[in-house]
Image (cartoon, rainbow, N blue to C red):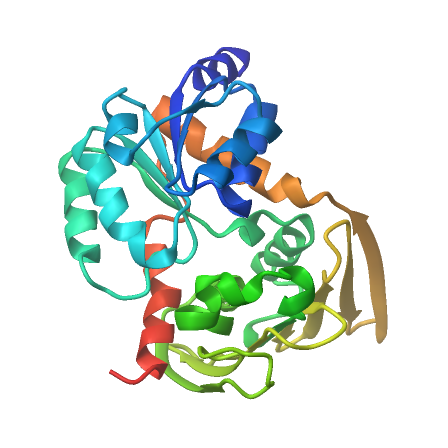
Length: 327
């Protein structure tokens, strides 16, 4: 294992996008021992801020300049609508691709991206980091083991006050065209935990909270899966306090995970035999999830392993969003 760890540390990585998520991945990759990092961003101040936080990252004047330096892999961390065309450009340049969620804001060129990745034998992984959350992984394993019988319903809730999270929020693209749909992690988690394909999806959404959004600040989704299972997902950018909870209801019990805090979670399981709730807490750090997903991607590249959340897996949550939005 040590040999593999050292070898993935030698990969050359190009970071495309130096906003908050770009800075986070740069720091995480550095903590994993990756030293050959390049970065590009059209906003010079963001580029320099990333370098200040993670010294040793080299800067590039453009995406083309960065790709000309033959990186092994590209991290696509720019706005959602640019994900797929950027990934296609990177694969054509001979790179593997990690892209932040969501996969895209439309289905345009996704089939092309998938075909191209297969033809050129390149990995494409989409970063749904909460699939690596300790509490959620415990819940997933309990479901697999039959702890609560057959899962029948998943209920996910995520809300936070975006003006507090991002005081400059009115300058973000979230306000213009993605809104609370940007909180797609929780939709992805509902699909991941149900472990089925979505049969039908319905939604109600809008800018209801008077915080200056043009895009929806509130989203309610309902999904029906293929085999006797449903899910409801609530997403919003206005509520106080910040809350994040996911509930799994099975034929023989219930599991809930409450993880509004980045550094702690509560896992609750109803034991039907004892007729009691069994609760436990766990300590986490925000970067734990990012570290695990980045390591998995780098090892997949270096050792030619499949990625867990590739294009088709990430497409599931995107299709739900697109099915409830007007065509």
